[in-house]
Image (cartoon, rainbow, N blue to C red; front, side, top):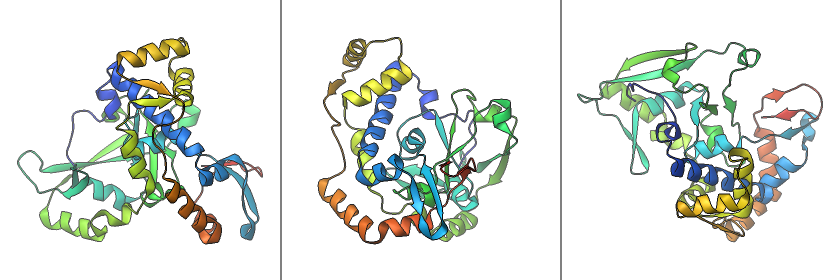
Length: 284
């Protein structure tokens, strides 16, 4: 909603070791929690079959991109292929848990769209935006969400393939876009993930599984006990299982809906991008 000298994910702007460690542990803990959710487990641990279309595939989940999308600091940037989603975020400011309409002021008269051209990045060995797709938790689908790993790219403003399109904030135009997007309600459906991540961001104790996953992925030169010592310096500790999770009543309610009609509804509406054309290929 304004032009910044740098366009970097928060974790690359505030890269002290404690912040980095905390965000990595939160990301790994979120993946552990999601993998143990019975419906997510069903979708990722065996092939998904849509009988009415005669297709079968494996569902692939971008867990780190999901962590970014729900507010955990990561080296990813949120992206979308929906112009209305982009417009909504360009004419709002986030404050106190909600998106408020920009009122043009002396320090915020212009905004900026970033338009990402898509040459064949994989051939060049560069990172590409990863689709989050239509997840069981449906906010990413409503926002046509993608996630771009900025670890190697650094600053989006320095990427030659990215076009910057400036616009002038206007009260009437902003209000029109805001209302057309139902003041954001169409992009933020009820979603149990938001509450879960809110709780996760408040804890300083992480499960053994999450710590080990974090060690292997980011601190391969350290032992598990060295990880424990490093966490203790940052006032974090290790426990047997995640300190937060989905409420039992919530899981039971979701399973009841899933088994009654939710599975059929989700698979029918699933919007996918095939990765590989062979039967049994992955879908993102």
